[in-house]
Amino acid sequence: METTQWQLLTPAPQEYLNASGVPPLIAQLLYNRGVKLDGIDSFFTADYGLMSSPFLLPDISQAVSRIYKALLSKEKIAVYGDFDVDGITATILIVEGLSWLGGKAIPYIPDRHNEGHGLNLGAIEKLHSQGVSLVITVDCGITDCAAAKKVQQIGMDMIITDHHVPLPELPQVVAAINPKRANSHYPFPELAGVGVAFKLLQALLYKHNKEASLHEFLDLVALGTVADLVPLVDENRYLVKEGIKVLNNTRRIGLREMISLAGLNLGQIDTEEISWTLGPRINAASRIDTASTSYELLVTQSSEEAYRLARELEEKNAERQRLTEEVLKKVKEKLVYRAYPPLLIEGDESYPVGIIGLVAGKLVDEFYKPAIILNLDPEKCHGSCRSIAEFNIVAALEKCRDLLITFGGHPMAAGFTLARQNLARLEERIMKLAIDELEHLDLRPKLTIDAEVPLSIFAGDTFNLIQRLSPFGRGNSIPTFLTRKLEVIERRNLGNEGKHLELKIKQGSAIWRAVAFNSGKLRETLPSYIDAVYNIGNTWWNGEKVLRLNLLDFAASQS
Image (cartoon, rainbow, N blue to C red; front, side):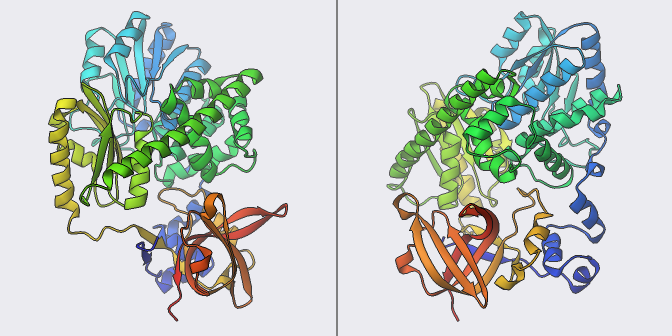
């Protein structure tokens, strides 16, 4: 925390504040998020008007025609997904949507450990042997040109729906639906995989005037969109805002059971609960075993099965946490003996494939450097990458593609496989890329601050006005504030080994409770007056819901 750079955003122009029609602090938050004056109303309402026609997506008409042909001919259809929350929810959405239209689709979600991301030739052949004539991919496929060619050769058709960045060469398929395609006319390119799947279902239902039926699928869309960390702006804002309403009244008994066992309450689920509680549990299934537990949980109609599967996910999530800490400790013990490089890379035969991405993410959080963690097999290695804003990791992998078997992802998170014999060359090349791009930079995590304010500004209805900017997430972060010269009037350590810090702080007549999680700044060393960066959230105190400050960083006041 001591090395974090505090970056206070530029104050909004006075004319923006005057014309906004909202209190100055709220106007500043809108300005910081790039909301133009004529877009303020739509930002607050975040209603159906943010939705664009699905027929603006490339190849969508061809996809609709081919799917209806398959439905009318009673063809066997397979939905090929991915094993994360986005992929699982997208798979369910299309399978259930086709069922509504009178079809029956076979779901196929690959095994993270044995098959990895993307289309697998063995799986394609297996589906062909089962009589499948049409494969619809969700959240994958846009870079799988070789697998798509195999599909064509064996006489199956394929429709790809994906949101990952395409390569210059597109797969030769019936339809490749992706808002990020260079020739796409879709106005919003940042849909999640489940969002693209939702648009396909919207186009299918449009033909029969059944678009209203889409609403009950929005719990799935909210789960996948939030968990996949796509920007919660524009159309995603509507999908998640409405999806959270559906989620809090979900008809999915497995989801209700998981929420209960996780210690949450229906009616109180928001993006934070999806990100930190529900998403990790759904992902835990494929990290420890296969995604089938999570898939079955979200589709089951049996109360007994729902409880059993939710309990199983709780156990897998606990195992996931234990393994992550175990591997992280091993990695850090190895890294400590090395020079201080701009990119962290480490591999071992014992690192589980399902955990390496989490470990890479924790290394980025701690050291603010790109991190690559590998599971090493005698023949093939699986790598998972997490990065920082200053280093586009998928672009770096593109420059190493001649060494890789497969790769894909986003600028801040990616994965790849490569032959073990190419590992040393990959390390050398990607390290050089990192040195060239990063060595001259001051690499410290940045804490972006919306406004410097006195504590008194949060009196009255200010918190409720701030909440009108929700749902919060990437692209619309929880508002963050700086207040200087706060008097610390009470302090105590909380949690295991006292790693959390709870304070009572005062400025003028305003007194607030505040908490700093995993602070490392022990109460004995705390100054009497601090400058603090924080956001505001709800907590429970003596059975009542109260507001508190969540401290993100603090330092001794200088004046």
